[in-house]
View 1 (cartoon, helix red, strand yellow):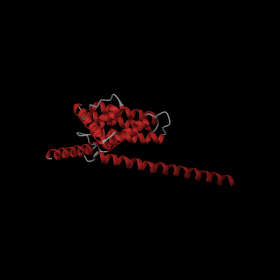
View 2 (cartoon, rainbow, N blue to C red):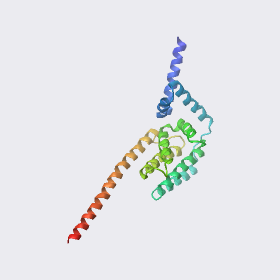
View 3 (cartoon, rainbow, N blue to C red):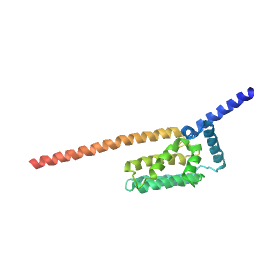
View 4 (spheres, rainbow, N blue to C red):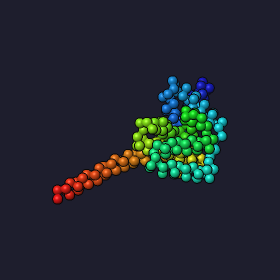
Length: 213
């Protein structure tokens, strides 16, 4: 009886640890799998693979270099959003490689990143989905949102001496901050559109008044 109680407690501890480590990725994998046991086994396998990788923080000089690269990408977005999004993807992948993550395939990237960067993994999925539609049906607004998603992943990977985004922000805080950025952008764009429309109407009224004089 004591053996089964100990086994049950061990399973509960393992489940709680996986939930805390993988966060929303745990729930996602649970939905995709036939049962909880299969999902937890796969997540545990991800941990084993991650432990075999030589993941390392960026050297300060490299961190500054990539931060400067990212700043140039954001500035380029104003004139060439499609090209800037492609560059954003490239910079993110370069940082992955620099830190020791294999970059041979998208699905493997997701699997490896999920162990230490699960909180920003949905940002990477969303950005990748839009990036694959670049040149197709992706609108400028879609591209803008993809840049915000890539920025969340980039900032998380850039790190410091840990896998946190900044010393005073956890990945959960960053995800919330990025969601706030999206909401603010969604508010600003319609307001700007209304402002532009009001200006056009005012100019039209002014032109009509001049014509009647």
